[in-house]
Structures are given as C-alpha cells and as structure tokens.
Length: 294
Image (cartoon, rainbow, N blue to C red; front, side):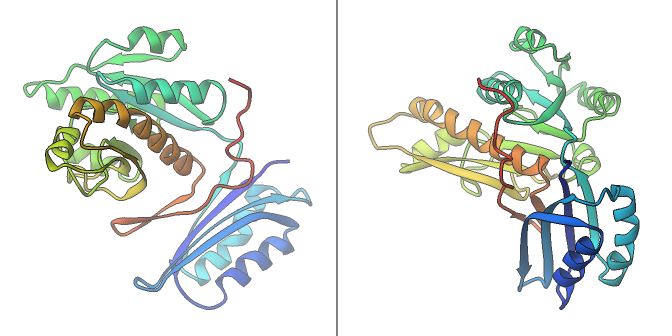
C-alpha cells in the first residue's frame, strides 16, 4: 500500500483541519500521521500528513477533488508519492567525512535518495564515488573561470534532473544566480553553531573565543553567506585542554549527523519555509528504518 504525503501552507483560519481530514475520509483515505503548526506571529498555518487510499482512489482523483479546498483557503498544497526517491546531487571538496557518511546511509537504504552524481573541484574522492557506480564530475573553480564553472554545474543539474543539491563540505561560495535558481533546494553543512562563527575557519574562531560547545548547522543556501534558513543543528562539548585541531576531529561526527538529519527531513517533505526560519515536523513512523542491514 502506497503512502502519500500532503503538505499545506496557508493563512491561519478556522476549519482548515476539518476540511482536509473530512475530504480525505470521504475519498476513502486513512491518515497514518499528521502534524500541524500555527505561527501566531506571522498568521501562517503549516500542515503535513501521511495517508493511504483504502478504496483505490488514484492520487490524480484525490488531487482533482482537493482543488476546491485549496482554492477556498488559498493554500499552497502539494501531494507527494512516499515511494518516489528524490534525485540528489552531492558536492564536496577535500573533507570527505560527510560524503562518506551519506554514501553509507544511501547504500543501506537509511537515506532513501537517488544520488544522480557527485561534483567536486578536486579529484580526492573520485575513486570512492566511481566505486559506488555514481557519476563523478570534476569541475575546477578559479576566480577566472567561475562563470563557466557554474554554467557547467547548472548543466549537470539540468541533465541529471537533480531536485536537491547537497554541499557536503563543498568549500566554494555559489553565485547569487544559482542560489536564486535553486532556492529552497540547496542544503549546506556549516561547521559551527550558527549564527556564531560564520565564514571561513569557524573551528579556529571558536577556539580563539574559548567556547565550551562546538556545533554544526545544516541550512538552506541563500545569496547571503551562512545566513539561510536553519534546518538542523547539534553540538559537542569541548574543554580548555583541546586544540583547534581537536575541534576539527570532534566536529566531524556532529557535521555528518546534522547533515544526514537535514536531508532526511527535506526528502520526506517535513521542512516548511517560514520567512528566514523553518518549520520542521517530526518524522513519520518507520521513516528511519533502513532497507537492509549495514
């Protein structure tokens, strides 16, 4: 039985939940799980629910019938097939811990995505990628050739059909043009607990400041460096006895886990844009289960 995901964003008002759940019941659908949030500051309503059809209604029939409710509440509503895997393009430079972690999760089915390629400005991980039967694209980036390099990158995105770009420690700043074209579809992992220590060398910045916690932040990429809406964060404790190099090693695991959790939330349509913030709903039952043991 196929699970479908319905996501809804609209202005807050009475009757939204009743209209949605009543409609699905009339169409013979069973709601597996549901989450909602009413932002009292902005007046916006967000809802995500997972459902199955118990009377063989097709998703096309359900979409067509839902159009009336969508119009009534001026909703932005989307239906997603829970069995479809999102096409993801990974990008990496010379730190490979996030890439290796994602490849492992993908291989055992813990991260149900379709990796359509890996782009890098170095050759360090070419063999690793090719050994996973994934296309590897080397795109050298310099100040002189950046427009051409980004044109090639967009060509790879279009050719592969990538729906999401993941910057798995890709150490190049993307242009405003790419950020706008792929708005809400590029996730970056930054190795600090934003908004602290933006930009280059955040572990060095944290060490010099004498912090007791270091962290990692997964966020959507915007034209403003390390300023995009935050999806996921976590921290690790450090002490006065540890060096900046220690911070780098301790932070690797945090970065990998935070990035994987952010991707998991995005591909399961759990993340909603709310201005420069996000609403991130809990995972549906069973969505963390791996397809096979690793």
